[in-house]
Image (cartoon, rainbow, N blue to C red; front, top):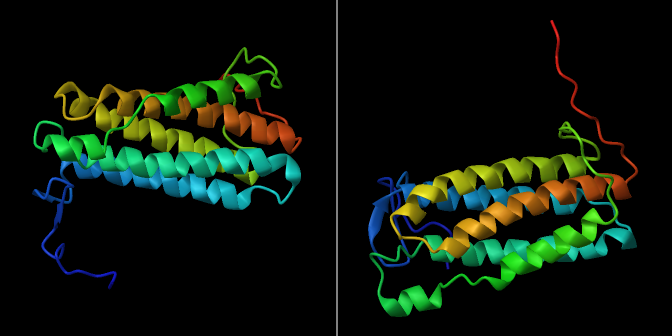
Length: 190
């Protein structure tokens, strides 16, 4: 199979429904941003130290990367335009959201409480997880109007919301494991 199909040379692509849409269609904007989030998570994984204490973090992030492909399939199948069989095939379920919550709770047991904002940064993997969080938030903002028109299930929106929370806590946790202190935000005074 060749990587290039030439079917997108005029600025269009296909949804899972088969419908051709412009590459800047709101669904494609959301899909592209979810892909960008997934890529940034991949960079974060590559930056994690080769140390046994990060193996569980790597496993979780790989599981999330797979889930983001499933989430993308749901985005590529607008519910108001797709056959029931395609909607069922790309359904995005709730159990991933509960798993994120469990992981967040487990990490927070090790972290000091926050009383102010922190600056994104720390270890390169922690800094990349902060970037992934901000990209995830952008994905969420792009999905909101699609969800309001019932083209995307509530689970997609909830997963992105919880994933951004998870990525924030994970960035703190990775910095904690790497012994990189957090830099607390200080109000800039002129």
